[in-house]
Image 1: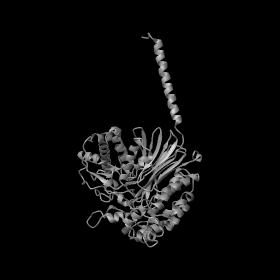
Image 2: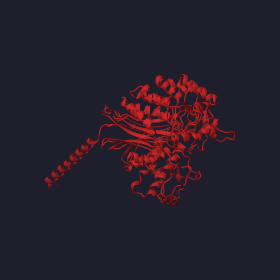
Image 3: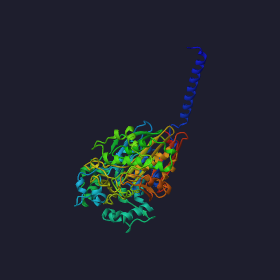
Image 4: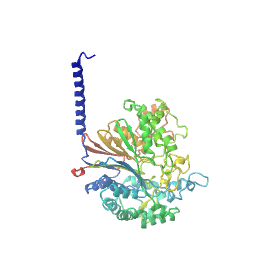
Length: 575
């Protein structure tokens, strides 16, 4: 049995040597990966917001302080997209402990906002009431989130991190084209309200490109928030004006429900795709679950080897299935039982995958091929990594363009119109063409379902934060961004990727003009898809990356808009 002990011994020694060499090589490769980023990188939808975040870092703050500065500045310079009258989701990673959490600052439904309150005389959905004015607004969450981030995770006082936003609100900033065009499209609604007219018609006419837009009342409200924290917005003078202003326009808010608002810390969702660890938003976001479903469905194919038409076909079919489940199952987890474990189970995804024909579309058979309503400007996103390895991915919004259109007199606060994100009439689509049922019906204090999908990606070599605006299209923008990173693209290439979208109903592939070639469109139509390949651009994706092998930071800011990414290299960031 042992005629050749020397050969066996040599073989054993060779195996041990090979194993040791491999382990040493792995250790050497690991040693090449930097332990901490060489500084900070921020990508946001406006240069002034990016600079405000970098200033917080220069003053000794961390990524969470920078997030407060960026968020508040965006609330000033992007009223078309977000504001302290709205809400958002802040996905956080603590570089020291590795802890991850999502700060849920989603708006909540006032007690009076029952489903019946949004029906017209014929029993249909009153879209004007759900999308415009006081009844369309939920109790804002963004101010509470800024206080929470500052006091629990930051190092700098709110007076420091809010200073840029306060200064810009008081001194003003140049109006850009998107701001002026957005106002023109919503002018008939916004000029219904005295508080809005006082801000946007202060010089006698609507905002024009290049002129300086000032918001002194908003500056004062931000000063109260900086000085008094939570009570500076949710109690006292500002809260009294919010309640009085809403009620004077026919709404029904109470001081008690404003004062009782609070953010919630929620455990993020986690799953893997290929070699990536993905951390993303849990309910009341619908984005994280949908993202997990789509990527786990797609994990059954090697997309890199496919021709473009078949790759798009499979991606669309994954979108179709995820949005169908979004419609039926998802809502505020504090009010309904969301089957998270089942929806994120790889075996469930495998069953959905098995229902996909490799060469034929699966008809939705419920709505016509009407294009999905387009939203690109009503939400904003930013991403941050600092020198300590902390990172933030935040999506914040007021919902539609300029939210409800109503600025509360004496506050400068433009209210959201997030009530439209509830299933106000089950089975009837909202402004984005998506619909819901009982799981997303309004109840007092309940948070409406959202598509916001702030996300982290990580593998052995790279750490990434990514997110986007776009209504229901947020989820598919982030999906395409992740697939782009998996293909080896840079952050800027990911931000520039052409976009296509499917949301189950209507049964149509929506694509930016030029995103799909005529030949690919022809092939998709031959498979049974309806394709609208000529839509305007949408979205405003922002993403940042730390490459641990090269110890470099980089960002990508969507070239479709006026955003900016920037890197601050500093030894002081390594603490």
